Picture 1 (tube, rainbow, N blue to C red):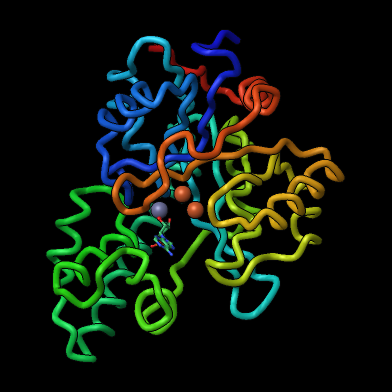
Picture 2 (picture 1 turned 45 degrees about the vertical axis):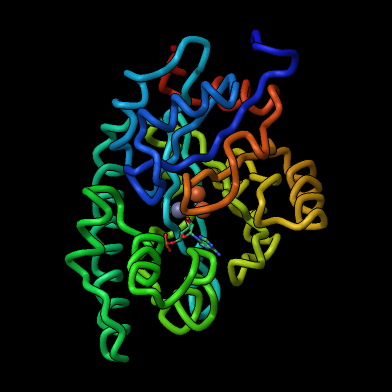
Length: 289
Ligand code: AMP
Ligand code: ZN
Ligand code: FE
Ligand code: FE
């Protein structure tokens, strides 16, 4: 593939206002052009709603991988471990996948409302209708609740809102996520390419054992995200080693969320070989600006 300046700059994990990012899909692809990326993936939580606007607004020279980040759980331990599965280039009309994404989005609303009820029971004045309105039709998540805590002057930043006194632990509730084996199977049956997002992000909470990743590889997992801001250098190296052992591709990505996080587009990137494997395995075309 050609690049703008030497090695292509490929960022395969970003969020827009279709979920919990702060840039609209149009703003996201424009920002990717300004950041001189060659390839961007849009991977909103549990939705493909941002795809069309992003494709229509692609600046010249930018390629777009249409994707999503699926909310999953591994039930091999009690309580189940939540985890994220990136899915690239799948058929957005696959009925079973469409239904499962809709179910998870509804489960997110249910959980958000229950978190707000817990907060209110402790005298914290946050409003669920206002938080839902803040998501503006996008997939609702804890970052939207974090914004309400910031507006109420209770915390100073999203990061603080994810501390253990708030949404990170005290007011953290599980949601009804997709079983991760079912998710891998569904993504593959929709022609997509499943990549385990930030699999060793211990700072976010519990992580799954290597044995599970071995089983997921056998079930159709294509790759592991190694370079991510929530991985320490040792965690990145471990993920690379595991991927090499299992024959999985390795990605690196910003997980950009606009102003909900400090990380910038292109802060971590993916090599061209991994990109080409994803393109070869996916059923949807890469869109070009
Ligand atoms: P949810 O999907 O509702 O469980 O919320 C998880 C989302 O919150 C992640 O996708 C991130 O966007 C964000 N998040 C998680 N941990 C943090 C953190 N420590 N600081 C800022 N944002 C975070
Ligand atoms: Zn997010
Ligand atoms: Fe994630
Ligand atoms: Fe993400």
